Length: 446
Image (cartoon, rainbow, N blue to C red; front, side, top):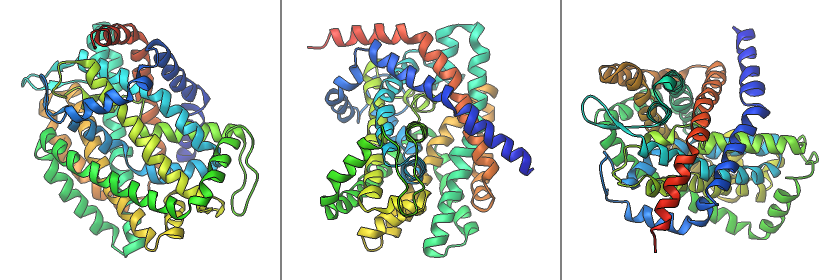
């Protein structure tokens, strides 16, 4: 089993998430940004206006445009924002944060295009409910002969959810609460399972309602704690930015417990952890945006791209800057422990902020990914598979809290990469549709 795990870890880390995949994600983002004439970057203000106006729906769909974004953010704002950023800096140095920003800026175009395609090519299930996502824009946009590619995405999405969106999250919560509060992992797992089950019984409407209330509150509290920490260390902020921009292009020397990092390490870990956090290109978020109550794919696309902006350029930046300004990045710690140390250095009780933040972030990630995997399951097996899926999803939560996850992490990373492959192919093939719809929409605006 150990040899199988090491082989899978190699395939996941060096092959599926190696240079070719990182290049494919970056290339797609750059290509879409250029093809859209930088609309995702130029229309940030317009996007926030649409988000505010999108608290009530304007068209067919199941949930408001605002709650569609909150549902997608519930899945993306999670362990990647706390542990993922810390791992990137530990492995790639301060320069990794710069490359996280870069992949986020081009990733906004990717997320925009995903949502435009998801709404434009969305469908109805046999019960008349709105459904959508990569499996539908592959099938409806690229034709029936590509349905095998749509099915491949759905298989990878269904299985990946049980890893990165479920067991990995419950394990992170259990570990954080045990180390900080001494709570038994099994108790955490069972409690989480009950809460998740209560939300899932209400379907997407209840899930979106919970996300619409919980995500903004938790994100604002975490960002506020980060801003306070940065204010306490305000004198170190200029030197922190100097470290970030310097080590984005020059190797990071060893310092304290930090072993040093090459420029390639900064690029690789910055890009990989950035994508892991904001999921631009994976094809997960458009499943939520497809059911938004909107009459315009482009309008929902502008709202969707804010997910990458908020997740990486705001939340991840806060975590990264706190780690750097406090000097914790040279401690030799990594993952959530590094983030905990950083907050604890400046704020009394910083470990509680990280532990509770991680717990809430992971809980909402379990909810968000449950919807993604459920829609993939329904695409493959029909509505009759929804209830068995929800039961299996709830059972997996406490199992993840008590099990060793080395193998699960590697498998989840591999499946996430395999989700991205059919999605990126579809985005490139359907890009002329995205460009045409965008040009028509914005040419009519005053």
